[in-house]
Length: 462
Ligand SMILES: Cc1cc2nc3c(=O)[nH]c(=O)nc-3n(C[C@H](O)[C@H](O)[C@H](O)COP(=O)(O)OP(=O)(O)OC[C@H]3O[C@@H](n4cnc5c(N)ncnc54)[C@H](O)[C@@H]3O)c2cc1C
Image (cartoon, rainbow, N blue to C red):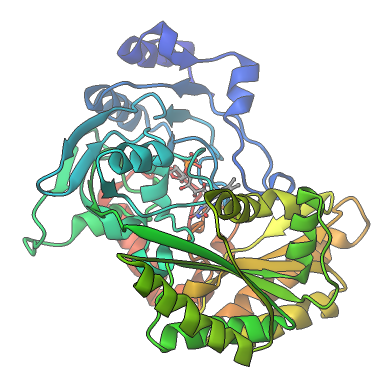
């Protein structure tokens, strides 16, 4: 518990209107969008809403003196408990540091504060003819700071990569309150270690991101969305891998198994042919109609070889929006199928997709649990989701065993624990399985060097 005198000292930095101290307010900052029953909500002692780097720096300086844990938070849409203050202390909520600081159309960059919502960056750039591609499905509900801290991905990662591929430079407040600048607007830079990359995906454990310079690219001229339905999940997975191997890189290739499709059908109030066992939403882009024709034509042929039942091209903007809104609503639609949903985030080499879905199915059968499988098949990142009722006796134990097997299956086919949601609290017990003793010792020593007192987001990753 923080002392009243210490709370007063912190309050003076941001002013009384920018702190939250009431019990109910604190409770609001005690959880995130991860699976609540597996993570007990933990209240912070104080929530602070800074509005400048200087304020963040003073907060960190004081926190370092008093050894108070500090948990940076964007909009709490994280899926692994990253912004849950497990040791109490301070939650540093950055959603009001939300200014777009500079748009540089010549160098194709945008400089932003950490609390800007991802969709706002996309729209701001699109209105000026440039493209910020990373598109986590939570783009309306997550901040760029949270995206960088989790190295968030999204459907477009197949062709355009993830958040980290667009971060050119950062301003970061370190554990002792000093302010670090990394990278910049230059495209090439090998001056010292690549510190920008170090903070990407660091889950708030190494520093608080207070500014980011992001790379932009020209906006593609045309887009085309296609929905393909298949008679088998393995066929759908193999088709994605083959299509990419053939040289057609879709912008997105989003996979849904039969359970996921049924969830979406229920949600969207339409019926689904029982022969349909999987679906993929492809998106292609290009500069001309001919290029789109070539890409869709080639992929259509490949899909037919792998058991496609239907190949539907969205002909209007409305149809395109409808297909994508179904995909974006998928996570919620699946969650609505059962009292509890545990969604994992494994990432495997793309050609291991047919093998991993076979193994996932076997795990579901072994533990007699319902599992929906969906995700970003184009880059091998799947979200196997267990649909369970944890109030049933023995269910939690089965879930724990099944989750362990899901991770082991991913590692066995050359994959890893997380493609985009990070480790947070929920996966930390498996980190050594994934990185090995030396890998964990190495990241621990980086943590120790940057945060010797362990005040930055303690209890996460390891
Ligand atoms: C419906 C839904 C769909 C989602 N879809 C996707 C998806 O498609 N792809 C994907 O990658 N993720 C997805 N997510 C997960 C989540 O949206 C992302 O992890 C997102 O990047 C979190 O952003 P946030 O602002 O909500 O961060 P928070 O949840 O508040 O924080 C996440 C982590 O980042 C740290 N952090 C936040 N801000 C800073 C900062 N300024 N400096 C340092 N550390 C910071 C926190 O300490 C924490 O560890 C989804 C979540 C939901 C609920």
